[in-house]
Amino acid sequence: MQSPEGGPTPLTDEEEQRARAVLFSDLGNAVSERGWVRFPAYSPEERRRLVDVAHRLTAHWGQQVFIEAEDQRAMKLYLAGHGSRPAPPPLP
Image (cartoon, rainbow, N blue to C red; front, side, top):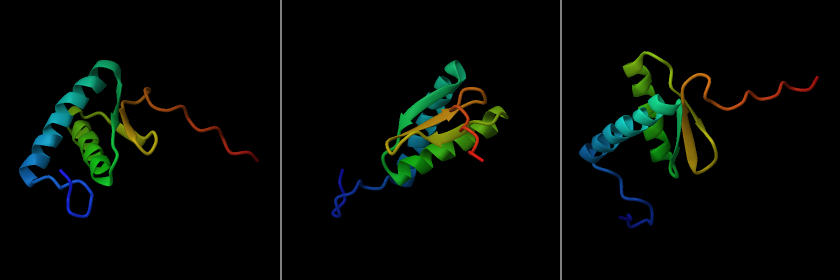
């Protein structure tokens, strides 16, 4: 659905809770199986939702689940050792 301003219609509180629960389960399963998962996130709301899921997974597992933006359309949730390569050290 589109709002009158042309953007997406915000979710109700119940819809938001269901969306986060599904993401927690589905993304959590993917991270536990292979150590990482990439998921689309086109809006600030979608990015905030994924950050919350990463925090909830960290609390649930007692192991840090990292999250980073890969580009303007996707985010990656991952466990230690499955993230991006470290940035090269700065030049002197």
